[in-house]
Each structure stands twice: as C-alpha cells, then as structure tokens.
Length: 441
Image 1 (cartoon, helix red, strand yellow):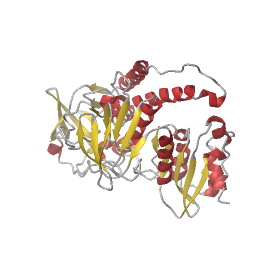
Image 2 (cartoon, helix red, strand yellow):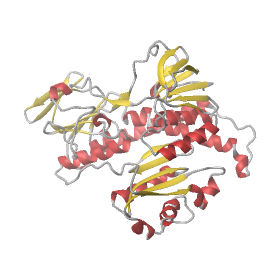
Image 3 (cartoon, helix red, strand yellow):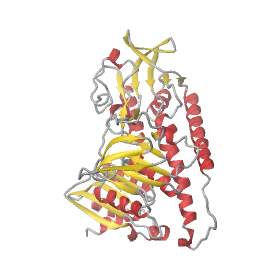
C-alpha cells in the first residue's frame, strides 16, 4: 500500500508528488496524458511561447521607433509552432526526470476510484488495483463547450487545444469570449497579421480584472485593429460565421477562417469514480483551507476545486495538502493570488479590486518604462484599506514580473509606510509601485 495516490499530473499533481516523496512518502501518480497537465501541454507554456515569438516580431516590425530598422521582417508560422512543441517537450521531459529522481511511481493511465478500502483507498488503472492511505485529486478542468446551435457542425470551431495545433496562420479569427484565454490568443494572432474579432457577452473584457485596466487594454487593441463586440450574446454558428445579438436586439454576423471558443473552463468531475468516494461537490470538489474534502484522508487541489483556476494556485494548494498530511501547520488563502494576462502590453493584478481609496499613476512615471516602451501606455493602481495595501493592478510591460512583489506586500499585510522604506533598484519598471505610493504623501 502506498502512502499517497495522486490522480492528475498537472501543476497540482506533480508538485504534490515531488514534495510528498521528498518527505519520505511512497507515492503513485496517475496521469493518462502527458505530465504537466493542461498548463504545460495546452495552456500556460505553449501560449506564452507563441506570445513571446509574436512580441519579438512586433519589436522587429516596429524597430524604427527605437532607431533600429529591420527590412523585410517576417514571421515563419510553422517555425513558431515547431519551437512551441520543442519548449513543451523539454519541460515535460524535465518533470519526468523530477518524478524519477524523487522516487515517484508514474502510471500513464486513467485512474478509477473503487472507493475506500481497509486503511485507505482502492484505485484501478489498466486492470491493476492500487491502494493508498491518502488520496489527492488533481483532475483539472476542461474547456466549456456551450450548446450553441451549429457549433458541432462547424469545422471552423476550435478550442484552446486545437488552435495550438494549427499548421497555417488563419487570415481571420473570431474569438468567442473576451477573457484571459481569448485575449491572449487575440493578442498573438493580431500581432502576426490575422484579422481578429472578439465577441463577448459581458460589457467588458477580462471580466474579473480591474475595470480601468481592462478598458485601457481594449482601447490599445482596438487601435491595433481588433474589433470588439461587447454585451453581445452568441446565438448560433453557421459554418464560418458567428451569429450574435447586440444589446439593441440587432442580429449580426462575424466571419472568420477559424472560430476560437473560449468561454471558460469547468472542473473534471466525471469518469474518475468520485461517486464511489462520496466527496461533497458543488461547482467543484468542496475543500476546506487545508484542502481536505468531506471524506477523511481524501484531498483535492487545482482546477477541480473551482476556487481559483490558475496553475500557481494549484501548486500552492498541493503544497498545503501535503503539509497537512505531514502534520505541518499550513492553510490556503486566496487574497493574494496574482492574475496575469500575457498580452502585449501585459496586464497583472493581485488582491482587492475596491477599497477605501486607490492611488494611480501612469507607467510613464517610470524612466525604465519610457525607455523600453515607445508609445506605450500603462497604469499602476494601488488599492488601500486605511494605510494597508490590499490590491495592486497594472497595465504595461513587464508587469508580469513585478506583480509578485505586490503579492508579497499584500500577503504580509504591508502598509504604505512599510513599502516606502523599501529601497527599489533604479532604473526599473518596478519602481512604479513606490512612485504610486509616494503620490499619496
């Protein structure tokens, strides 16, 4: 009998497996696909690889703004896609090595929970029974496919999985959904010359992110040629056409060589025998702050909990779960989890959206930002409760690398006075945090 069985080898599962094994637990990890899960194989890593290629092309195409001329700059779409595959393959291989070096037994097969057994849990994979004292569910999530008339009959429709396998650049793309996934693909394809149209049901893009930052990003992409149709409900798909209804009731069509469906994700709850386990489920598997489910000895982490569908959340939840199994004092908190959109420019936010007051400064107050972002616009907004920093929201490169400092400040309960005493290196774009705080004095 193993000490721990983990179902799912994504950023929750493989992090938990390595941590548990290093602590002396015998671990079996079930993953039918490739290690790394959606994040590494169909999400975070491949999309960021593509977006970085697009960013380089952007800089080359507009190098004259920086006094550098690239004549005949072009993007080799098949080469970009090939590099994406190479990056993914390298990182998947790295996780395999980590599992092997940690002593984790990896079973490349689907796992099915038979239910509790004496001293633990019984699981079957490829007709072999495995038993473990503890169970960690990291089954992830899948793209939501709503029942839109005509969707199943259209060869043009793709999800985040299929769009990563395209062999040719589409001349036009309609994106259904203006969330993080939709906007990142809109950014990539817009940068490489595809005509992009975004149809979103909400009155804004990037629904859960700061309204002002979202509006600024939308304005910048509108200038780049992306067409936005907000507060519009998709009613049908007719071949290559997305039929949608405007707030005024007008029926319109957006036509694209490809149609990207990106309207959200839902936890993977079926096909694993959860009904035999008897864990309480709502939208996802219900857990407490220690990642314990309603069944003693069974834990869950990652997208399957539906609490925060981000890879870094999954990894932290996995750490909390293993620490609880090991008897270490630890608990999960969700008030300082950064969210990032890797468009160009980037968007990043952490913590509260509203507070007693907010402080705002254009990114142009950072000399480094001005030096590296010709014609670039940006914003730093800091949310305060009294003098305590509770939220930070930013637009502008490279805020994805700066937001971690804000997450530390929020998680540690830092005040304006605390952060003003910190020496920020100069010149860095990160100085904008201190500049914004100083504006309150």
